[in-house]
Length: 269
Length: 269
DNA sequence: CAGTGGTCTAGACCACACT
DNA sequence: GTGTGGTCTAGACCACTGC
Image (cartoon, rainbow over all chains, first blue to last red; front, side, top):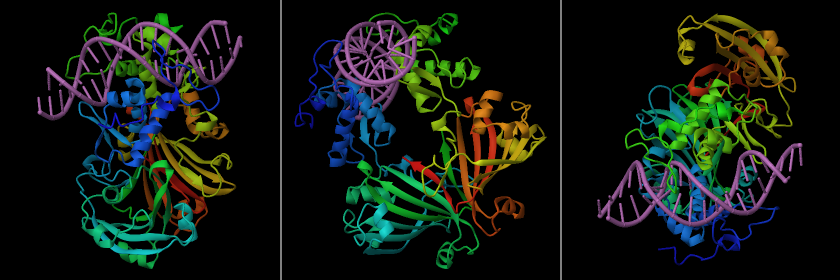
């Protein structure tokens, strides 16, 4: 459907010719970018623009090939990379879909804390308790990591996650005020499912990647009380910056993890 | 050179025919494995067998295509996956090389601890001090994670890594005795470069992937003394199991990281 | 210059899911 | 059956490296 409303040009204005080689003349040496990268960029733009929403199918490879006037193989390679980056999900026989944090088997993709015994699934979702949800002005360091200006409005949420009644994670997160206008503690508490899924459906913000930096710390008195541990118990301090498209930071999250029954798991390759 | 000594059969005995479709009849539904996966497996076997050593070039795509009687594109896809898994490294215009831990820019690939300020490189390599290097018999849990039997000979190494004179990492590692026969404290101390590079050149053991599980702990008296911290200082406990080819565990490493000047950095996607 | 990996196309067929 | 992604081939040309 979208394929005839789409711009009918060969990406970057290199009209394909015929025969074994379908490139009239590709870019010269400096700043050379392969066609499939350009296609990838165009698909990315549509993703950002919300042309296809999380969970929806994007047009078939054939459709996209026609739309961009390239071969199916070129579109394929572009999609391959986007799928490798977890922006798209391919399903044989069905189509290619915009990835979402709402799916069952990829839920909590960014949460690396696991129970020591037993699989990750059997434990089930955590019991969530919102401590508070305040609008305030960004401090200098918050502003810097969120690419805002000091004093810009931000939303601060604090909450506790418990497993089997044991408080295990204490989180404090900051969100830029503008994109998340209207977010309240009530909305957060009532929502079933991952917070990032709510961000997608209610605010059109999709978290694409994140970076965490981890330390070992002792809690202060308040933190210890909220996690129900003594102040001398060492905890994992996990600072996460999550990004949407275009490497735009959209969340700063500082977590305190108890590691007496859980551990942070990481695969290296 | 290897291409004519190699088995000249189409992988899994599906002789290619001619024309647009070069597969006579591919595998039927159950247990279907694409050709490029089979090629990948064959390349993997050569890698394991040491046909090409770390740092060396493997045969060109054309050579491999001839050797396995498939098209270049099929070999290409196999190599693509192996490169994505960091087993091979492609270099345009030069060839495809067996990855190694000895290269400058991928050194210490598994070490996620970074200085808080400044780039990872400027800090330079750590000062390494071997505490001891003992041969002993595997305890039950060491044996389990290394796929050995209790009482099998293992090597235990303990060492401290310091940055700018500050002891930062205390490591205790266990290696299976058989593959590492002949490893001594002297050999470890005298070697310049990453330990995993030594394992490659001296013992033919290449670490391919690893898994870490992280906790926050307090050190005991001895650990505190070795790291020059008080016993109430929280530390990162990082347990790593490193694997060679075929998911064979080859190392158990338990590290204690100071996080007052460094942090454990992790990218999520 | 030749050789290597990298890109692109066109076409055929396979495996899978839905109808 | 139809349509989707997935595999495979053959061939042409581009970009990079080193002789």
